[in-house]
Length: 217
Image (tube, rainbow, N blue to C red; front, side):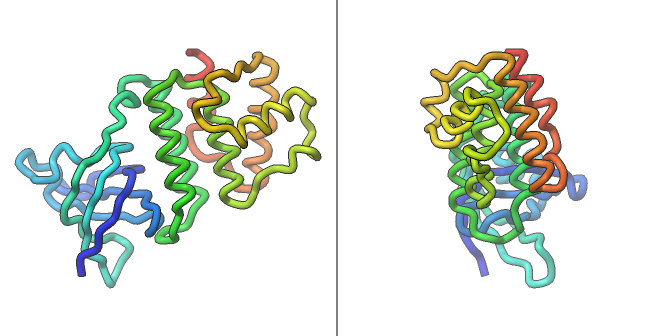
């Protein structure tokens, strides 16, 4: 049976000389993995439609024997091309994808996580990457997981607590007006580092590189 979905490509990897495994984040089916047979051939109908952070409508045949389903058709919606033109943006987007993969279960509906990730990628395309953007993604993601910190009780300076509250509640557009000092950036980074380690067991891959790249902008 063929099913349809809308999703963001989180990761791809070669399966054979001609085929790819494509990992998707979808709102209604959560994270799913598909096999794109022949996608690496130049004349494949899937050629040019499968890359990191592409958003697409797609169809697939569900496998009854594994979690790898057969990708059928792809209608590309958005490439988020600006992300691949800037290393710092790419590092932040890759960290977000790693976060999603580490902190969520496969094939579990994730509409809020999908919308958060889609909004984050759109924002990265439009604005310079910054540490506060990454902090906002982390805090909003933790909120969706039911792990949002009690900001009244955490060990942060009053100024950092206020900023954390803004990052958690603000729309992406509002973050452009927020300016953090180096001291505030370091304080929030260290605190979130410990908070993530405590609740997730380990940091998602790429956090240090994402922060370093954003700080250098």
